Length: 240
Ligand code: 13P
Image (cartoon, rainbow, N blue to C red):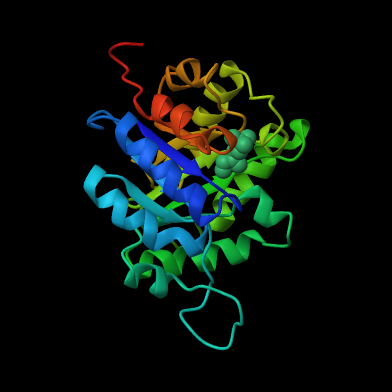
């Protein structure tokens, strides 16, 4: 399973250090899952140093669509790659709310692949009754002219489930994962990993990870506490 933490704009350096110290003693051998942590840009190097020892992957939460240039305040895929970042989360609903379009996500995705970064591409509806239309548009636009899914995961994150304490039902997640997989197949992508994100917590992660054909989860709030994220990261499908 892929268990990914999106820390969003949270934690100070003291809190990052504390999390890593606690997590390292709690998480054990990490044999069953691919664990990903996506901290803020400023803590990437700190987390990378720690992650090497534990076989954890480190992702950024965004990158710019151009390789370099006069883009004050931005961070490029080449910069991320040069410090050993493994991948990047792209197209998050919170970034779309700040004006990011699917065409921009498509450019960013090409740049990420060009610099050998893995990608978690987020998709999710804003309105229930338009869910399939919105998801199909987002995936087709974001993956336009991409010819391999080798490094791409798609995270289904309905906007209403993010940070709301109201996760989507298992049945809904199952149907959306299937729908997304069908779109991917039609586009010639047969191995795309598909995750769910949106109010995943200690109470629901086992149920969600047991949904047939799901490949993992993208966790926001519950990934901020070392104890909670260590428990979630230790998921073992043969025991649960
Ligand atoms: P929450 O788990 O806090 O709902 O956030 C989900 C998310 O946006 C992960 O990218």
